[in-house]
Length: 313
Image (cartoon, helix red, strand yellow):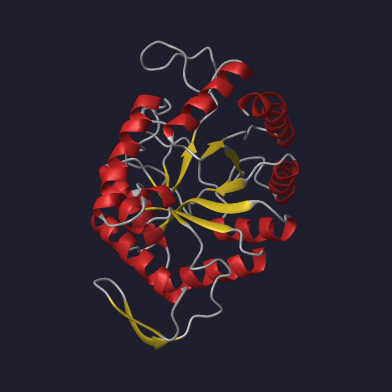
């Protein structure tokens, strides 16, 4: 099993010192990847339902550092960490410029970028950015992925799509990773599973529905569906990376069925959960060690590495 962790994008720890301290310590402790979330603006008031909390409200305020800016800083301060967008909201940015930014970061990081992608949920943010129509965000995202793959592998390039077009352009250098940086599709809806099956190099779901982790039986059911969809698309399911964002929980809070939440409790219990999810087909687990202070975040990361990772095997 490989492990990843989130870097702060907002709040008191989202400083140069805080981000680099956590990134460097995670690399030192042998974790595999660092995750960077994506928001650009927040509305003062929002009617958009957030899918990962009980009240469907997003817990954030208005502050957020920009994703690619964080990626660049962390790339220059580390040597081995995979750098993962988790997830980049595809319709927010021009696809040609985004393809160039990802390729440049891949070159400058030594081939360490993974592009986690999503279609977004915050309609007011779409409006503020003058993004393509919110109702068409799935189709737009599919087209942006096609543009990325073309511009990362073909020069000169020509594209005539439903939402975007260009003719006879060069967008080099290509990324170091071949054929291109891995694309992990976020989300657990059927549409997200279809996108991962058709276009993705991995599936990257948030391990929380109504503020509880996706139970192992539901994860196995999703993976069975993803396998069927991947095979129907003529692709190899075994080639997909399954990267699961699994929150660490307070054991005092019960799960939906009244029992212990996965990834809560003692180090031995969490290690047992890790083995269970590994057996279901998960390759990488992403945990969130962020707290209100840099020292506290690092302490949680260190405790996980010292107490849980050795037990999980």
